[in-house]
Length: 101
Image (tube, rainbow, N blue to C red):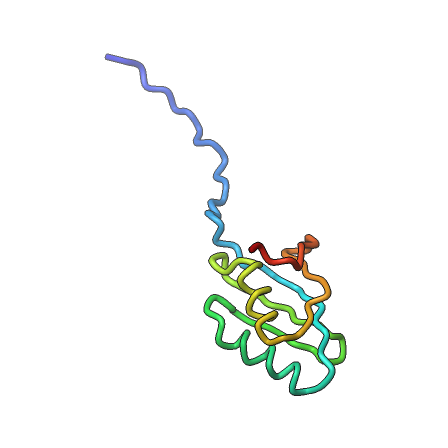
């Protein structure tokens, strides 16, 4: 009969499979309440957005999104409002504001 050894299981590593939420931040030129309202409306309709904050005072749009919603999709959605996006970042990393053709 073969000898059985008790071997401790390796340390468990959390499996994320990309299931982490993302935080996207954009600097958006907005001159009035109508401008920030337009950005609010499109973010409110975007599937995968868990929460968002659009500030006319700080000219920013911050989006907390599910892992399924990528940066480019949020950027494209904001740009569709006609507002100029000056800068963007994803999870604290500065990203391009140019959309791939």
